[in-house]
Image (tube, rainbow, N blue to C red; front, top):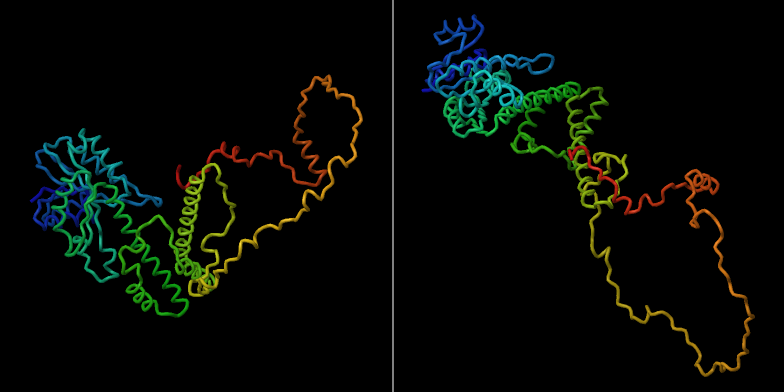
Length: 439
């Protein structure tokens, strides 16, 4: 049996504390709301308004304060207040306690907000004076109305993640929470609290995105007079994204092939024709287009690095991959080697030899004495004199204006720097690196 404190006795704290109490642990609820404390006390539970760890043995302190949304952003004031209360209680504690962040918070909150506040108000350091863990609560009640499950299944989640930098602390929290899992559930131990927080956020975002996706499909079916239940039930039990857990989960690259790009863009155009906007599908196509551009930039950077100073940047303005014509493999003509390669019969080397001109024998030409002598007139020796001038004998290069005027007169194109594209000049330029690579 372990000693457990629940800081923040709302929906998450009450569910966690009751489940741990049923498992045989000694649980104390802490909340600043006197009405909530009174309700818990009337139920026969140990509840108080202040956290006091003086004289307590090693215990698990759960921070279950609410995370409100203000102006579309997480408002972590309650989480910060709970962390400060835990820090003040640890300042008077005699043992090393484990602080577990149970609230749903953005990734990095445990490391960047909770731990500094606890260290500040307790005067202790993480790892020696206390331990910090992130184990967010997975509530299944949001899907109870859609799947027919009972709301009490929220205390026995299908997934439990525990993130701590200390393996021994991870094992201790695992022993505490494993009895609360439902049969066949998963438990993941992580060495970074931020990963546990990110898993909880991605878990909720995926469920919300799936619901919105089928709501868009429901609107299309309703517009066309189709049965959306037949469509959804058939797709959910046959599509690879539902049957294969690893399908599409490795991010960093766009989807491709012959189906997905054409099907998504084609159906988006069909929805526009029937006058039905599909913002989620539009976002899907937009995200994939962004990853295609990123992949093109990375490949271009690799080509540039491999080519060095002799790299020529390609022309921009080319169509995206999805817009390029694609010819399916089935429609292509079969390739036969004998149609493209026909060996020829070897030809004699004499056919390739150049023609040889036949000259008459040497004795047929007259003797040299028979030719008349040629006399050359006497000439005066040539004298070279350097002209008296103050300028350099080297002709000065014309100015850009003169070159431009000469080009206009000749009707040609003016090039002010003919050697600008010479390899020796290009080697002096700075290599262009795409911003997407962050180099």
